[in-house]
Length: 616
Image (tube, rainbow, N blue to C red):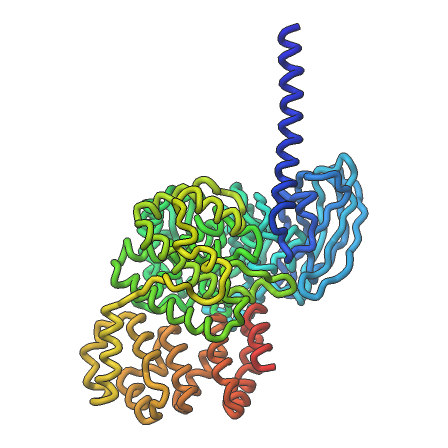
């Protein structure tokens, strides 16, 4: 009787606990900003796991097969609504193999077409048979000629921000977290890799199995397929690349293991098992993408002197800020990126010293100033209101650099030791969760500010345009020397600065070129180019700022190498400012359109969508 009573009581308590937890989840979703960039009903029914079973078809440039979605019900909703865009859905089954009714709802030009699936009371999962189309914005299909080896084609996905819905029917919002596994079938001679456990060797079946056991937001589900090889750096880091590039990539990224060690020393254990990097073909639109366990990286970081590896530190830092603790919607994008830039620079300082990090911070501040001079006030805020706008509109240096300087301000005012303790606890307390700006501010005030919210101008930083008066000032002695070199060059010519520049890093060159006077003559640029071969430099960062100066001065010898650069490189960070500068001059704009006609097919959607707008 006593045991029965206890069991009955436990059942009641468990039931009440379940009801309470569901109510709390519902309350949390309703009282915070819902993601305005999803058409799904994730606040009613929430996907928790995805199983992909896909075949990669290079001939037709499609992915086809199925995805099985498991979910939990937060409300009494009798339908599961998913995000889709440019997908063909053929059939939907429940876990017993029974057909479920489905229909597409009203199309939204920006967000796609929601897929509504009718659920029965017993439905616990749905299996959707589908295929991608040639309009998919996430997929980049490259011919063999567009790769380093020239023998095999290549394909990769880019899910951030709202592109996963163009290759998987899913609730495409950072507001949920899912685990996933996959079976991917590829042609002979090709290796697939994902943001999951990965093969390091080929198998004879051409079908590969993947598992991501930690929960991630759907934009972090990623796939790349090509003729790939793997080389280990240490026992938990390594590099994937085309075979002809593998040795140089591994040599460039030799410090990856040290970066993981430095990151763990700062903010706690790395929770993802391995940290590998795949170096993609040049069309990749970003510097890097922090897909868990496998960062996707641009080949433009392979400079030959390890001078651009801060990008790897940045993507590693995302393993804590972004992947472990994720912005709940794209209005809070700065919670991913500002924290990551701060963390990245702390890693770089630990490995390469404060002087090096100050150069990175000062270059970042210069980029931030450029964005502040061009963006509308509402886009200069850390907390954004992006309803009706594409989330990519928020991918400016506001989220990255203003976010960084906000955190650096906290460190300078409240002490590095306190800041480190706060961040370590923040990552641990919110691991595998999503968070909004408002929730972060509550946590910040409780655990760090000690009543100084008003004194430190916190609300001005988060909700205001521009930079508050307490923005940290960065001084770099190495950059002061670069500025002195500008003066010396203008007075006495390039040979007089040759000894000075012989020990320069990429960052000093960037600062030097950026500080050349606006009225510099083509003759002066020619002398500089003859001495240092800047137009043929192998470093994409240096080439970009050099080309910008060349466009302004109409320095014609740089235009042919610029043309080759624009045709080969797809990284939007470089393309956007160059095309914008070319578009300011009618003659240059005509030239740019001719180049773009040849280059556009080499770009990912993320890049050509931006350049289309610049060149009309």
